[in-house]
Length: 125
Image: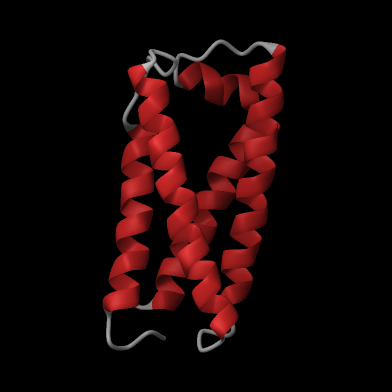
């Protein structure tokens, strides 16, 4: 898969989750069985804003695939999703995420795998 396609997928997925977390935090938290108290809503909106920012970065990076900065964006995405995977796993093990516990885990693994595949691919654009 081409890097441009992976950046596009990551941008769209990030925008969808980011918009949901930012605009409807209680709904998204409830979908995971998380109590939507004031602190959780605040953190969900903060996470949503970060995902929206990352979505914009990924979308814009598609224009210059040969830039060293784009490789930084790719590795930053992998690192972000690795940390998200760890965070989701810890929350599942602690019993915080009780509904659809592995949805986030699957999304993180898929995004990591797509970026890793694009990096290993001989043709990057």
